Length: 505
Image (cartoon, rainbow, N blue to C red; front, side, top):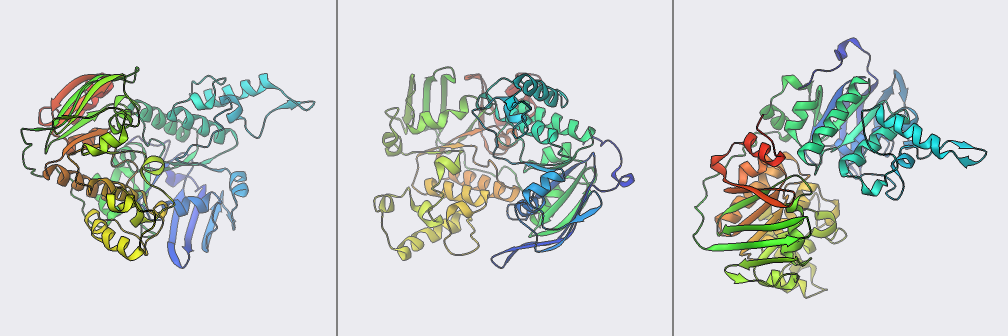
């Protein structure tokens, strides 16, 4: 953990929350939360999905108003914060879903709402100059004339941060800033966060990545069931105690003893190519085996879902499931073969957000997929054992799936496909954006899938997940396979080094 710019004890809190409460429809989301935030510190806000993190952030940024409690900014108490008032006080939030105008330039996005004019005309040279200054002041090197839509996710985050700091942000809330980023991009974001701290900005850092939090945070606060259970210097916490505070119990995540892989092949991919993104990709997965494809986010493994599921037709290649050739570029043929491809984009491609939990669970089953209308009682009866098997929890009844936590949505997505008797599965980042308890549950589901004799191909950008689940790992870089290893013959650091094309540190 990096040391901060100085001890917070010697400085006054820039933000002080006392006894914050909030309920929605009679259900309490916050139950007397206290929080102190100091200038020049990175304060991690931790907790499971549903612990109250989002509600607290929305109250601080003025989206919701607290039912009770007090909020002080700069030593002055403020009630009924609105978005405009919060911004005026220097509180800014960079959400997980980036909020740039993708058709405008970087300069226009940085200066949005404050374009310098002369005689009613925009002074474009001044726009570019001031945007460059805002970026360079944070050590960001991005061409201000680039269109925002051409930026990487990491670059988009940097531009949003620069915009908020330029607007006077002195309390910056970063929500999952490194989600779905490669190790290199994540390191850039963490470096930027440290720069903010050194410049005296108070940073609220929200992340599901525990190792990242332990590395970057000065202090942390853990919420559970709407209450603060721990506030402590990050250096005084270890991973096990942090997980215990978040979950309320020990969460054991280890490789279980699985039956060995069978001799027969369940899934074979040969010479798969698609433009420059995927080039001559080949892998064989036996029944009962988990083989991981590991690479930086956005590399070849990010295109495999479209190619294996039939959403896109590759330029060349061959796909076999259970020894039988499968026509490429045809979704129906991929499904008929017994191959189930589970997307990493559950919100857009995986689930129908407006449909109910049970409807989504049953959507891939033949009986219900062919019937647009069905009895609710029959649907609930069929869905109940799947809910139970996959540990899906809803606060009440059968709500729209979009109202569930990320972990529960991911379990619904897995249950939807994995209960259809697959021969082989392709899983794309199955634990992306879920909390530590949901991650452990999903890992157990994947273990059970392999134990049933299913051939599992896992695409992941997490070395920890690969070490936990895989029997073998294929490392890809720039669309090509660069290494293949039995998981017992490589360490986590060696695996990360191969992914980055370097040497283990």
